Image 1 (cartoon, rainbow, N blue to C red):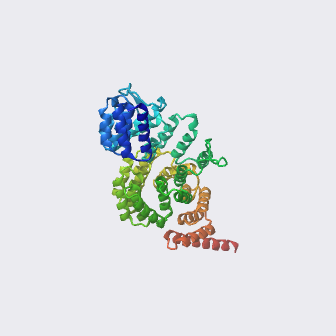
Image 2 (image 1 turned 60 degrees about the vertical axis):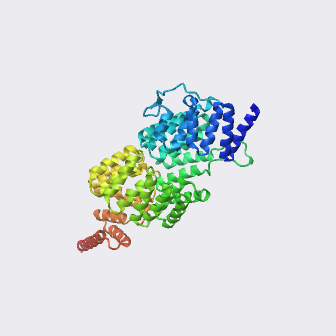
Image 3 (image 1 turned 120 degrees about the vertical axis):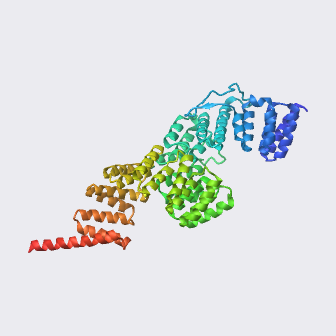
Length: 544
C-alpha cells in the first residue's frame, strides 16, 4: 500500500472516531498498523480499542509492544486500560515507581530517560506528566490510601494547573484544610494568559471570605471577556452566565447563610441546565434549610429516575424525609447513598444528623467519626462531634473537638460560635464574650441565621453585669429577627435587673405573646408587676 493510501486510511480512522463509529475505527486502525508497524499507528489502534471499550485487548496490544517501556503515551494508555478494568495495583506498576514529598513534589522517578514520542511537539509533555500524577492519585484513592492520593493530586496540579480534575478531587473530597488549599493555589504557576483561571480557582476554594472581597472576585470574573472572533461582533462573550461560576457563587451564598438568595440562584441555574449535579447538591442543601419539602420531593423523584446509580439521587430522598421529620426513612436513604459512594461527604453528615435528631448519640458519633476519617479537610464532622459532646454535658471534651475543627478551618464562624457556647456553659463568661465577638467579626454578612450568636453574646454580657452593652446586642438581635422568645425574655430580664420594671413588663408581654405557656416569663412578669406596684406604693407614701 502506498504512503498516500495509508495516510488516507489514518484520516478514515480519525473520522470514524469523531463520528463515534468505533468498530469501523478499530477495523481500519488495525489494518494501518499491520501495514506500517509504526509506533504511532499502533498507538492509534490502541486508542481506537480503548474508545470502543475493548480495554483488555487494548492493554494486550500496548503491553506486547516494547515501546510501552519507553514512550509515556503508551504507558499512560496502558495504565488507563487497567484503571477501566479496576486493576489498580497493576495500574500503579505500569505507571512506574516514583517518590513524592508532602508538598506534592515528585522525586527519584525511575526510568527518567522515558521518551514522549508525540509528533505534535514537546510542548504537551507537561500535560502527560500531570495526567500520570492524577491517575496515580485515583489509583491510591481506589486502594483507600487517601494520604498518597492527596499528594499525587497536588503533584498533578503543580505539574499543570490546567488539570482541573485534580483540584476537583481535592475540593469535593475535602482532602485539604482551608490553609492547605490556599497554600497550594499560591504555589501554582499560571501562564500570563491564565489569570482568569487563577481567579476562578480562588473562588472555588473561598468558603468563608468577607462578602465584599468575594463579590469583587466574582465581578472581576464576570467581566472577563474573550478576544476571539465572534460571528456576532456586537455581542461580548463573558463568564457572567457561566453555569460553573454561578454554581460557585450559589455555594458561597449557602456558606454565608443566605439560603433564600442561594435557592433563587440555583433555581434559575437548574432551569437552564437541569443536569448540573454540583448545582443540584447546593440546591438541595438550600431547600433543606428553607424547609421546602415539596421542592425536595420533586428533585428526589427526578434524580432517582434520571440517575438511579448516583449517590446524590438517594441523598436527595434522604433530605426529603429529613425535612418532613421522618428520620428513620431518611437514615435508610442516607445509608444507601454512602453504600453507593463511600466518598460522598454530605451523605455521611446527613446520616449522622438523622441519628442525632432522635438523640441516638452513639450511632451519630460513629457516622461523624467515619466522615472525619474519610474527609480530613472537612471540619463539619468534628464540629458535630463537639455538639454531641455538648448535648451530653461533656463540655471540656466538646471544646477540644471545636479547637480541632478550628485548626482544619479557621475561617468558619460556626466554629467560633460553638466555642463561645461551650465557654458559656462552663461559666467562663469573659471567654464566651471573646469567642462570640470573634464569631461576629468572621461573619461575611450578618443575617437572620446569626441572630442566635448575637443573643448569646448579649446573654454573656448580662452575666458579666454589663447591662447597657447587653441591651444593645439584644436590640441588634431584634433587628435581625422579631420571632425569638429568647431575645425578648433576655431583654426583659436585663431591664428587670436594672430595676426598669416598665420596660421589663413590656418585653415579658412580647415574649409571652410568642409563647404564652413559657414558665420563666410568666413567673418573672408576675415579679416585675409586684416590684412595679411596690415601687409605686413607696413613691405615694413618700409623697404623702
